[in-house]
Length: 468
Image (cartoon, rainbow, N blue to C red; front, side, top):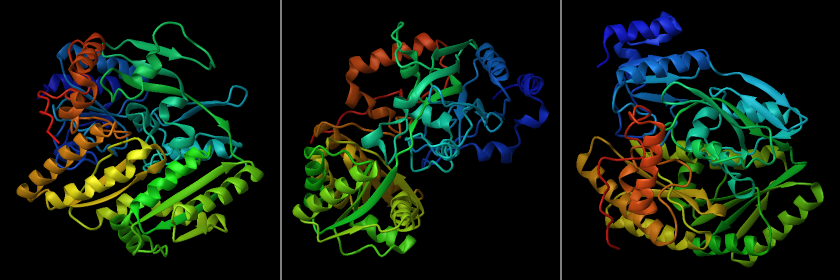
């Protein structure tokens, strides 16, 4: 619990109207999109600039008060929950696009800018920012940077880290550093930019970012392929890649997800199908048309019972929005929804989905699976009720086994959601004890007093890996 004098010091830095410590205000920032992780902060503060953030951090370091940087709170691994109390820092007042540099193909932004705002703004100028997390309509770029967010276009274009050229960051001692620049090449020392991207707010606070842009693709086309077998859908993914085509989007939904999305969006999806693939290609007209026709042929060759190519942008957008609405559609079916993101090599998608289904049956829980088939990033999503303690214990055991199988198949415990606090007990399963120790040493070098987002990534105890 922070002292009144501490809150008074915060008010002196940012002004009384930008410091929140009422019970209702604290409750609003006690959770993110992760079920079963809730804890009130001691105070919530909304700084206006880098200098104010620096002063806040210096104050917190002096008094050993934890800091949790928070964007829109869409985190799915308890990465922005203040489980150790302290100060939640908001970025709603740092929401400006500072510069669009068309000569160097960059955009410089503050951390509170909404991701879709960036995409729409640059597309209006014929440019393109590819990362597109499903939460892009509400997530902030600062949150995307902290989590190294992916998205539907990750197969062809990569993820957030591939587009971060430079950062301004407030370190845990309050000092401000700048990393990178508007450069195609820069090998001067350690790559601090890449280290900070995906560090989940444990190493510093991003206050400004310069993002790489590319020319906007000339056109795009979308198709939906319907399958009676998950194996056929999975083989199609491998076949497309083997034929040296890289779609902009290559998404997968299993039967429970198809049911939920159709009930929610009324797109005319075939609820009897075991799997569907949503495939999109972008680029020059001639290339896109040829690729889409070739991919449609491959879908049919691998056993698709129907292949539908969208004839209009409106039809294509309905299909895309249907996939983006998968979580919302599933969330309507139960009081609590737990969305995970185990990732495996593309060749292991079908075996992994079969294991997920077997595990769901073993622990008597309901799991629907969808995700980015092109890069093997699957989202097993459990429909449950956090009020049922016995069921939640079964859910936890089910996800433990899913993580173990993902690693067994050569994958990882998280492809894009981050480790946060929810997955921190399993991080050593992926990186090993030596790898975990190196990460802890990096954290200690940046943040010796452990005030930056404490308990995220590094759990008190690592879970013993289960035997398969």
